[in-house]
Image 1 (cartoon, helix red, strand yellow):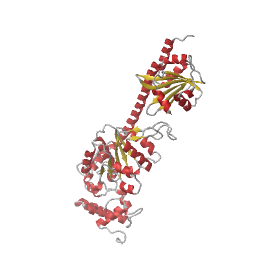
Image 2: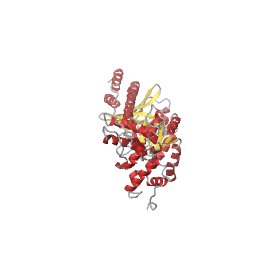
Image 3: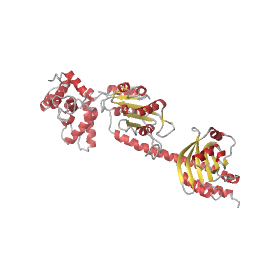
Image 4: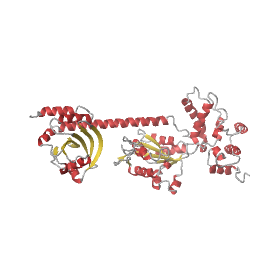
Length: 511
């Protein structure tokens, strides 16, 4: 019975354009084509010129649809066949072993005894890929089938191009939603952070920040835990040309070693047990922005090697992936450890150290910039008053600021923030005295506090009094559990150094 080609063309065009979901449209098309030619499955292949391979994205049968991302590498002969002039848009391959491309695909999908009808999808001279019909058994397709199938080249190419574009837009939308969710969490976490002391204790630091921010050079922030390295890193980003891009923070010491590659570089679906979907890592999320690697000294050796590649090549590779992904990022690293000592002890790669140590900035501890304490206290009082939903922000009592100035602050700004919050909880509606500091004990005995309130504060004297009281409580023990160093929250060697400087005897001398 003769086939009405116009009606055939119209019906298939309607079906292939009936849905932006590729699998749905192709399954409807397969069911219609089965009335006119043998067809057990339809494959959509995309040609990856850069890989010299075929990427299969869809397989459809009468009863099942599959979305996939399967790569089939081609031989040199197969790659050359794509560039060969004069190849018809529709080819009959009744015996896979005779065609270098179909042979590889048939082997990959375990279909060595199938026939294929292959239609090249070309739009405006650009080769998109191919739509392939397969039927079980050899010698299933004829020239008549090929002629009928060739009528569909233009509508299939256009419809499938639109569907692929739609899928890409959906992926980009998901990525954008994912990024927005992630960045909103970062903004919430960073909300309220501002730099106190730009005109006093942090004046030199901010001068260096202003010099380096407009550039692309890596920055290494050095300083004790709690000094505010994260806030300084944020300032560098928001003063830089990358301010409109993402600012991604990574706490290198908080990520389990088994997950660090996946967290930093992402992973492909099926890369390991539990990897049920593709995931972009922190470096990929930071593209066109800044990534802040806090506590970089905690990175395990294998992550240091991959980090070096990011700095050198500006590209990453997901776990389980084979494709290099370019990233346009600026790296700011931070550590409280001595990386030079770690390099000497073979705990940190020397080449990575040279790469990140381009522009080091030391953030001083709070005890070296005590002139900032009053401003920090009032900043934290206002901030914590809002967080605790107090009606009125209380004022420090007379002598309270002097008391804070006399303390050595081993936990730096973070400890001061916690002290202010604890004081607000304990003294709701009352003036803040700050009598209770490290470890929950009075920092000084009452007579010392009275003396400090009545006369100008001498920092060395206040420190010496505090150390003597800790020694008294620890029965003269400096080191170990319950020792003076533990009570004061500082390293025993640091405490001995301070005692020597202040003329406080210890050990045999104390006896």
